[in-house]
Image 1: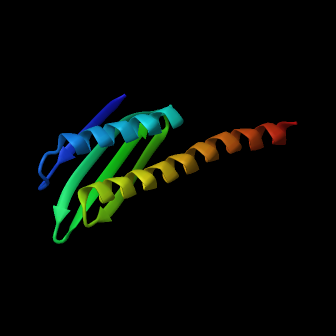
Image 2: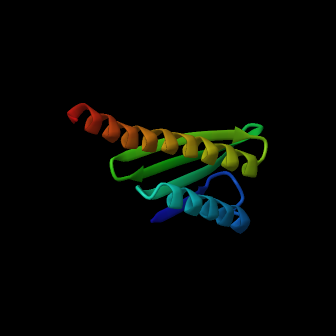
Length: 104
């Protein structure tokens, strides 16, 4: 699995990088079909933005989080990512079950 954290207009922070990697590891355990996470942290005006892009087998998800602090924006973006991954995962799993029930 690949995790890349990009700091743009935001001071580099090893703590935030570790927090991102730890959160991504949790997501990867929950959703093993994921293979690459890219997280970009930016500062625009009064807010911080975090963009998350996830790819994997037949999977591509993007999410954005905005907040006054970098950590809050990261948390929001990764929570949105988790929701989208859950939605995709459930769609795949339940879609297979529906197809099996139709054949029976």
